[in-house]
Image 1 (tube, one colour):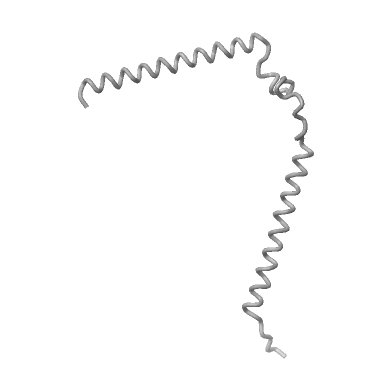
Image 2: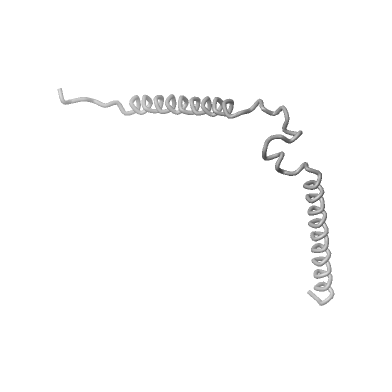
Length: 100
């Protein structure tokens, strides 16, 4: 790399840093305006934001039911698989009792 390439690389870095600083300052301005207007993040965390109104279909009880059903399906499939595996092993290697 010659001195020309190094200066071009540093110029590109400085430009990208300036662009990032500009974007950061614009984001800060947007957040300040949003907080001043009263539509801050507190509404989102409290669940009172306009965009979240009417989204009460999925609540804790519904999720409990879904996860409980999923757990039941997983456990029943596991029991079924081990039951079939156990009988397949017994069929492949039958035990012969000679103690009588």
